[in-house]
Length: 362
Ligand code: KG4
Ligand code: ZN
Image (cartoon, rainbow, N blue to C red):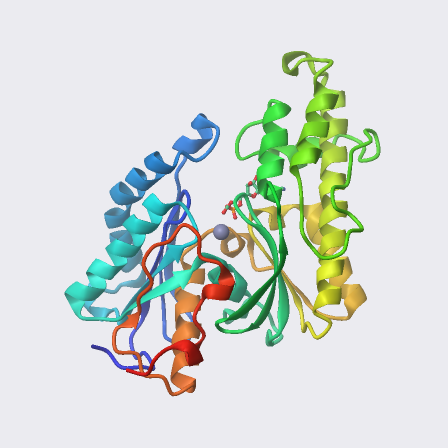
């Protein structure tokens, strides 16, 4: 079994939703190769079907692994450790990806490191090359994707505190559902943002759920219902493009206002925050991005938005989180015999991620 710190590259797998991804990083975090495959079938089905996604991961992983090793000009024997996301996410995909990585680790007598998906998003900002400044703890993470919507205080590796999250839909899910109501394709976020450019953000009065309330929880389902009510008189097929554009722009403005309000509250809950970090597919939205930048500016802290390919689901973040974790354990003087084993779990709250000091020395 390899000792720590690692002397050889780490290979990581991500398969918690509908991205099948593999990456290889040096022990210092330099990305040697990465491959992300988004399962396109789900676009035709209007969303992710868990069972189809799991089977697709199984079919795709051998090819994606071979492709990633070839890009890095490495063979499996050159890999020093294997990592995979084991939760939270769709259980079928998690079982496929993590067992695949674990199987390779056992066969090659290397450690296996289980990584929490949200933790991986949270630590991406610290990947070498993302920011010119060092991203110091603590910082505030806003994770806004199709499956997640939460504000997290990142105090250190293995030390996370969820400050607030959605009580119903995630922000990306709201974009997707409203886009569907407007007859746009899936995923809906990019199409809705494009249509919104043709409309006026103040044209349609829409609610701002939970805005002004204490804390930093989110709610988007009422907003979606309000949009549905606006569309109902026309019927989807007879919705004039100008009206659809006004609804799209007004919806986007509303989501943006809500996110800005919630993040301001979250920043107030973590006054010692050293930076504001965003992750998740919704971070692609220009209006939302600009308003987060403004909030960070007002708070006098840097705004860090990793490049989009690292904001959305990928395996680089899984490999980097595993490296950060190994380093933290090593610095805490904890020797890991078999890496970090965590069985796949659909729910894995961040607070339950073990910190180096939690682990029994072996
Ligand atoms: O992080 P991601 O790729 O996958 C997960 O959900 O885990 O995020 C995808 C989500 C989708 O809901 C998509 O509609 C949304 O991010 N999204 C956007 C934009 N681009 C992607 N939402 C708003 N504006 C965008 N430009
Ligand atoms: Zn994600």
